[in-house]
Image (tube, rainbow, N blue to C red; front, side, top):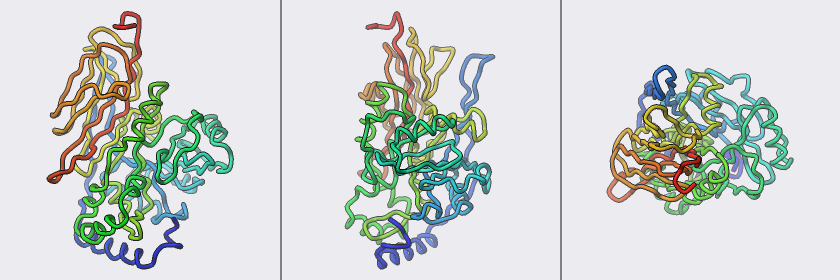
Length: 388
């Protein structure tokens, strides 16, 4: 929906009034994001992976249906303690000359392509693509130019992916903020907008967050066939349509949930490598900063992180460390393997599989919400593995 045309005038006025009042009621502190470095591997071959929090799938005024120019959006991301921002305006890469450092933030520029089969993000690219071409042809072009493709909100309701026989994508959004908000009751959303948003905009959005069960099930099925990186789509337009009322600045959305990339080289290329490979996790940081979450497979000497593959071997185990207590679940091939409450967990591995982690946190009196969704570690069966 275009915010300059077709909006209900009363809804727009209400959203602007409440956004202004929220700005008076809530003051965010602009501080540098925490620096957490994971050192992994044996002596002499240690790797240093830094946890960078940021946002992927962001729209500017150049999309035609969003608010905010790059500089102001970058400042919003900095205030939300982000290290990076991936801008994906619709069917164009207009800010490409500004890629790099903007307002102290690392900015990557891609595009959201509105293909006939659905929407997809083309990342690490230098041009726009013909939205009327088949998705498979566009994916081939992106790959030929060294980029990668992520399906955007493939499980709706903002737009479903229509052809799962197309398999040229590298990742998919398992969570999309805008889509999650749209599945709320419009009447109830307006009540929250009027009563809660002026005092606690981030808390109001947090109350709408649900576990993306349908997208997770689809993703689990895909990762049993091949590696597919999980992404969080902020899908931030500078507003959210809440059934006739409009709210949520870029900053408010950025503070709700972020992508955490484990970056080996602190460069634009290093960021893209981490995202493309799935060396990342989704952190719903509104109810506790997830920076410092660690999920590894180790044999006591070497270690493997999310997005990496290894062969099963005797003595292999998973280790999970949360930054604070939560409800922790380990999944194997999409099925729950272990569920505990706490901060730390070790699980001996008796066979190969696609292993990933989810963590929840309770907030308020009755609500439990997703807190962390990790990318998988792919453990392949090898000769000598049980059941091989």
